[in-house]
Length: 436
Figure 1 (cartoon, one colour):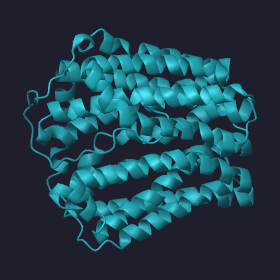
Figure 2 (cartoon, rainbow, N blue to C red):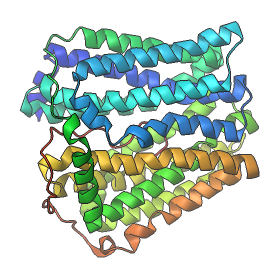
Figure 3 (cartoon, rainbow, N blue to C red):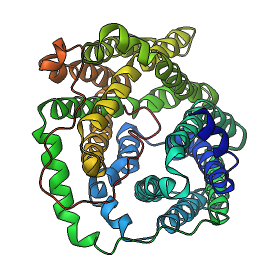
Figure 4 (cartoon, one colour):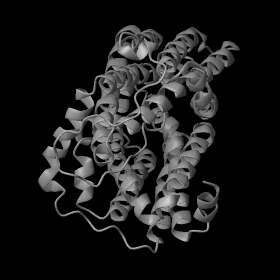
């Protein structure tokens, strides 16, 4: 991949796409900290209200995750991305304006969070369709690698930057940083010279047939079904706990925004390190055994971190365990993604990915809602305990399946359901943040 990667950055249109993604991801990482801190610090939101905010941040994945791909096929992807960037900039820009006028409310934050999730769903799907049309076939993998590295680097520095910006200019105005980043992203996208991809006129006609084909393949494959259910439970548990994390740190322990941002930076560091060691771990244990071992060990580490989130030196231990949990968990994530890609026929890849996203990402708003209800009833830390315990139980579907004793998982495509062929693309496995 050295030659394709080297020539990739001499590709002016890819450089513009990469720059657009880089500034957008950095701004998104800032908002990951800033938006909940607006609710907690400025509007004095309680656990249930923060839970609703996080629910709206992920709700679009549940409501429109399945049909979004076919809808995007009916449009020009670069225009969809531009609309997504401008829409997110406008919605986020309304927060500091309302804050300056003294009219900012929680319902407005809920609308902003839901609007962001809708724009993100369409942007991600369009991005997956646009990259292969922008570069040559031998540059697609290198392009995805470059963009994913940028995503992880932004995840490391962005939350900490968000905490510092919040500490400097207050949370509502810190959100303006993300609004500006989306405007910059749109400016880079608008300068791409390559003609946009022409829409597929048949996409809408086969929408439900494509959705059915994806559902049949995922739930008809015994190993894929088990791994998808495990991922969904893990996502539900992860958001259940993480939705209350800032409530605990900023609302109850009164930690500074900078320290709150370090928690998210620690998990991003763990994700990068975990990606580097995952292949060696799988080679030593085998892919099947490595999946359930990584799930089990990471869950224990996160469980041990819960009591250490305190306003004293114990916070350092919590950050270390939190980081190590992500180091170990990345083996499960990378192994699961690779397995899905190997066993799925190429012509079903997009529909399979959409189905897995719907199940796994659709669990996240449910987890946020449960986190808010438990946090309001029992407190933020008990809600985090519930999330950590459920994360530990998420390993059971894999542990009780044939995956437990398998060193190597199947590497050939499974049976293909009868369905029309679609132009499919694989997008990111999970969004940035605590969800798995």
